[in-house]
Length: 120
Image 1 (cartoon, rainbow, N blue to C red):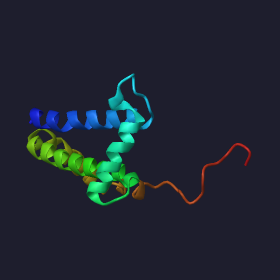
Image 2 (cartoon, rainbow, N blue to C red):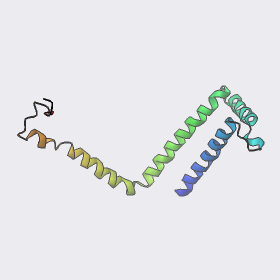
Image 3 (cartoon, rainbow, N blue to C red):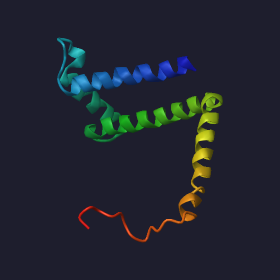
Image 4 (cartoon, rainbow, N blue to C red):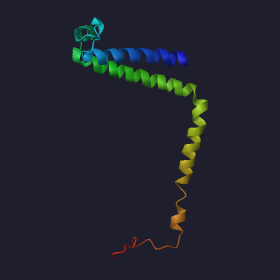
């Protein structure tokens, strides 16, 4: 499972790191990080996909979000024995505590008037 997470996380870091550096023109003297390569690559992807080059980063972000959701669901399913009992206990305790509002309803205090302020 850790291998799956590493194989998912490493390309995301590499791609979005490259995207952030190249889109801002921070090239560190390397042609790979230049704005020209960035524009050329997204123009090429746009031609292959048949969409404008300006829409390719949004498509890549959507694909990364979907992949992240898919990997998160797989990880949650695989590790459910660790987290599910805690979540179940928390939800049930919150659920049953919501019905215990009888303490206020059964008290003999008069709540029809608000708090008394010193100026009143």
